[in-house]
Image (cartoon, rainbow, N blue to C red; front, side, top):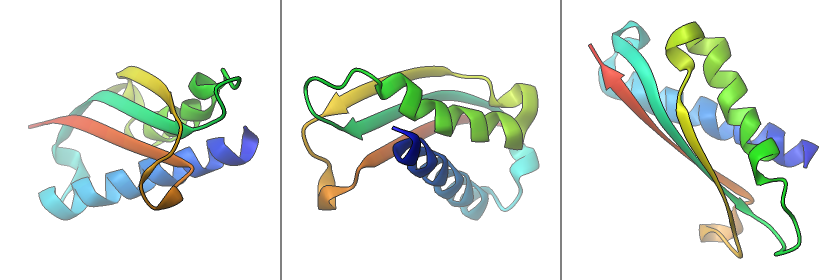
Length: 94
């Protein structure tokens, strides 16, 4: 779970980089509205929310109060290309 949380952080950083690429300036992000985290996991594992905390924490570090968001954490059997974690973010832009 700890390594998966680190990977969720990396996913969120990559998502923020994609937002920056599209907007040219992160100051245009008014709010992180929602985060959806998918965790490839065994059916007996129930710690998906703890894994996705890695993404939520990094968004709070980057955006402060504007990084607070609604969130879903979903366990799945497999992700594309055998990725262990996938994170999707939705942002509101100024």
